[in-house]
Amino acid sequence: MLKGMNKKKKILLVYPETPVTYWSYKYVFRFTREKATTPPLGLLTVAAMLPEEEFEVKLVDMNISNLSDRMIEWADMVFLSAMLVQKDSFSAVAKRCKQLGTSVVAGGPYASSFYTEIENVDHFVLDEAEITLPLFLEDYKRGKVKHIYKADGEKPDIKTSPLPRFDLLNMKRYNSMAIQFSRGCPYDCEFCDIIEMFGRRMRTKSEEQIIREMEELYSLGWRGPIFFVDDNFIGHRRRTKKLLRRVLKWQREKKYPFSLFTEASVDLADDEELLELFRQCGFTMVFVGIETPSEESLLNAGKKQNLKNDLLESISKIQSKGIEVTAGFIVGFDSDTPDIFQRQIDFIKESSIPVAMVGLLTALPNTRLYRRLQQEGRILSGSTGNNTHELTLTFKPIMPMHVIIDGYKHIISHIYSPRVYFNRCLTLFKKINFIKRVTSMNIEINQLVSLLKSLFIQTFSWYGHHYLAYVLKTIFTSIRAFPDAIRLAVVGHHFFKITREIIAVDDFKTRTFKLISAYSKRMSDAYESINLGKNLEQLYKIKNNFIKSMQKKYYKIDEDFRHLVDEHLESLQRHLNRGYSRLLNLHTKQYG
Image (cartoon, rainbow, N blue to C red; front, top):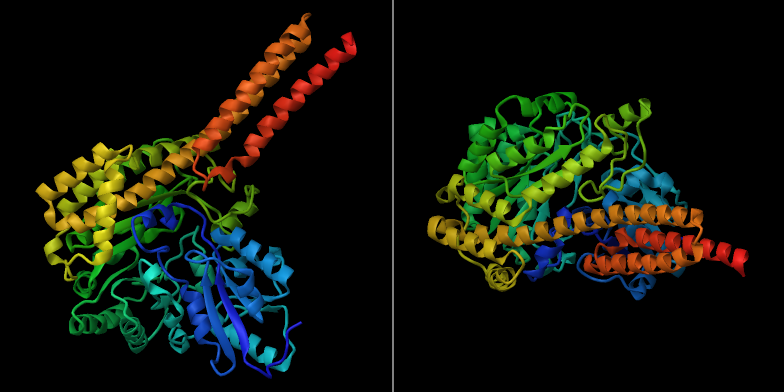
């Protein structure tokens, strides 16, 4: 039961752990002093909405530090926010809080979409906090708190959103800081849940708000990358341009303390003025949703903005401004044909996009795609939010599922083989005009640490000869790109590692099924044999050999991924041992 407001209440903001995926960049941090890519901006904004005269607030980001029982017991309430991919960690934290007697208040994307399925949460503050959190706090003061608070379709004016509590962060543990300018997206892609959560009408902060946030980060000592986390930063071009003119003035006055990157639709390339503002403001990278080179799939998915111009030309135009393009790609569309896998590989090569996030099409709840597939009776399971290495589809596809999975494995195995990846990087360096970049070319201490670790670790890795050839070619042909070359080499290490483990996990699962099938066949043959006793001796040896061989394979898989095959190893042992025991019992009954 929540207590009254007669004293300052203690609020612990907890951001659950993100599992190891392509997006987590976990293995990049082996080369750096950081522990996570960006801070939990949503929770920092929530913290700013809690009146300091009424609440004492602390933050635990489980991606950079541990959450102790003592911290949970300190709090009157734990505020949890997570994305779908973090649901396992979210559930574990909620359960711990319940056991320790601390109330849990949950919000954010995962809770807003799945609150009916979530356990151990006392109060849900859903949708956008600018609307629902004040309602919760008012009821809390009166001692009449409800279980669920929803916005019921209402969207807040984010000009009322407060300055995030960046002071709660240990900034040294993050690779970049985060700022949000807008919410929503004007487009209507069938598979996207952003427009379902935030709408298609763009809502933006004022230029003054963004400059205040940049000033705050600057005053707290931050120097380095800032990620504008907008799902489509150019969704309202007029306002974006107006903001960028202010950002440009600020960056010039401060001598460019920040490099910038964001997400945008690929039609950024259509607007020369906007693209030039990006360059002048210090944007060095932009993530775009390419999805597929198939025009039919783009059209069917409602991604019409990608059909306006030639995609390769658009990407080259952005790169020519000194801006690296990273991109998302998807396989599994209804109109995909078996040649799509090679087409994706060819497109990624021709576009010189090193960081190509390829995933399987996922039917997220509250999307047009999900609703259509549900009507068609094609939904098979719920999504985990991880579409890159849980090698299955949540729906019944048009193309045979095994063809899609095998094709997807072929794509990632190829594009993240070291030789192919490094060649894409080298081609990119020829396209990017580094002279046009306005950010500092000075190497910071963090970059120097990464360089030294990269040279030591990657030189002596299994792909060391490819790495050394890449470094030497960069030095002799694109020396201005050297800092980027080392950064991309370190990122490549993460991709190589993830890809190898994904393939190893899938091979382990496939091998398990084959061994169970093979052993079952041998047991059937032994049962029909007139010499069951002799066959039992062979089956005992085969059983043990199968189990030992799979145990060896199990321990070759990185411990971060073993949980994905635990059930399969246990199933193998169970099936083989039970099968052998049944035959042994049968033989004993027959012959004593």
